Length: 211
Image 1 (cartoon, rainbow, N blue to C red):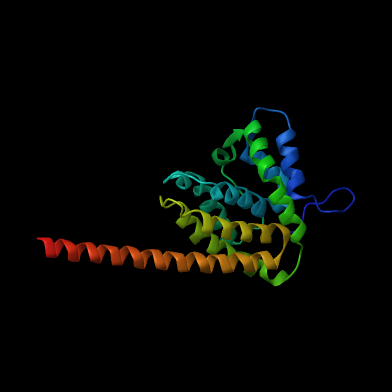
Image 2 (cartoon, rainbow, N blue to C red):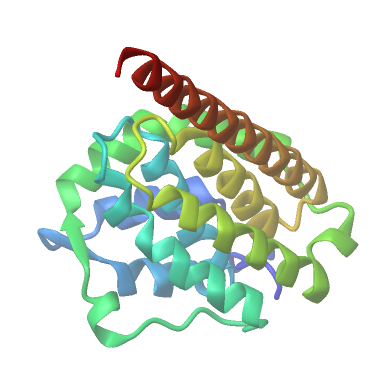
């Protein structure tokens, strides 16, 4: 999959496409419109959008809805699809265009900074096998996102964001950062689970001593 390019042969930047989507007419921006706008980069671009959304502070259960589309996208990537396919009802999901403009505007500096640092490199990490492994990792990370755990969305969402940037820009360094952040996610989960088990056992011991 090559990058979408302009008539001059230069790649169209992710940030430019976001601005164009926000500037188009119509009160609602549909997910299908976003997929069409990014073309061959739709996998990485749409996953990056949802990763950014999931990095925002949500109340418990909020990422159950915002993380669910990433399960679908990750499964397709893991399956080895070259192009992103969405059911019609998913493609009709929409957000207010003004809301989209405001949200993307607030994140534009960060997005452009990421674009400036990323470039095609270490291509073996974003090849067919690499993307399949990325899809599997994102599938697990997305499953973690949909769990109603307060504050549990940030690290998995960052990992998916790195993976998505790597797929979109063919940047193996971003993919490596994604794998590192995935490892951190696993370590945090193990620590949290150990802490919960220890607290549960302590509670049982206290209960036994009292009664």
